Image (tube, rainbow, N blue to C red; front, side, top):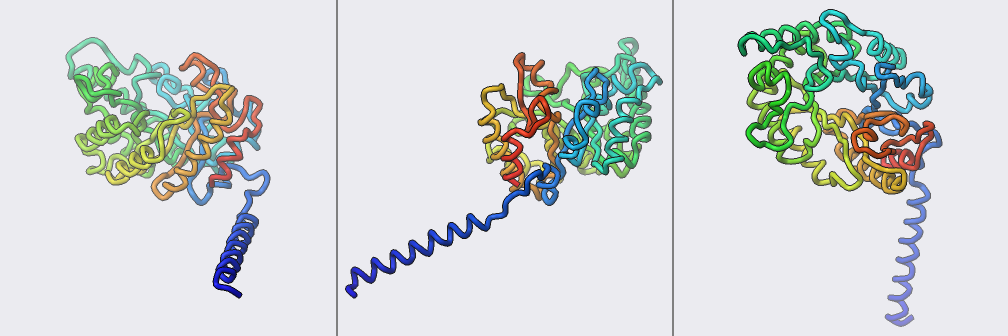
Length: 356
């Protein structure tokens, strides 16, 4: 055998071995069992949740969706039922029925439960504030109202709701004259941002065992993220043990954020001593871009799985395409989830399962 032919033979054998190894590797790669749920696929990574409604605005997730569909998830968040204007529309008059229904379902089905939200500039009853009197009197009225509300709500669900979005969306999208949302009735009544610290103090006192979160959108943007971190530092929330984590709302698009942007956001919050959850995930998408949606979700969950040591949970802001706030907000029909309008699994569901 010549040197040339021996080299050729060696090359051929190497190539055959490599190709055979690849075939064996591909053939032996674990396949996801048919019927695997989202919760099952990610049980070793993080809880998978959904925001649900209980008839507070006519839509009832439990009447619309089967237990099998809701069983795709192992965590629930009240989409609207625990917001102040729904729970206590008038002083001392509580509407517990929708929230109780969600809590009971979660408890009966051994699901994690997140409370949303105690302080927000929106969906907050006017009775909590007064326009009359001095700044001190307006502040006192607002804080008394908030203290009573937080105590009543968190005491009722103590031991059942394991984490709360205590404060929602108080940081401005752009700095301008203030890093904070100064048009909030809470900011105006308090005369500054100090109400955020007081809210966390009230929540910690009401249920010391609950995990307490600040929740906001666009915190993957470096500028807004830094404003949030500055606020948390300025108010001493981590230093004094008043906050446990942040919720990234994740109302995202088909191309943003990318892997690096998401990784940097999670890293910055974790380095500040904060837990991180994805709390309101949906992808803005019309009927015609569903394959792009599947690509997007597969990539996104691949990245989230890579970050699973630093992420405490991922919650979709809805269950299926028949009920999403995005349609009203953006002015066109959105199809942002893993299940279609009839509750059937979309290709995006399969791709998310594969990404696990």
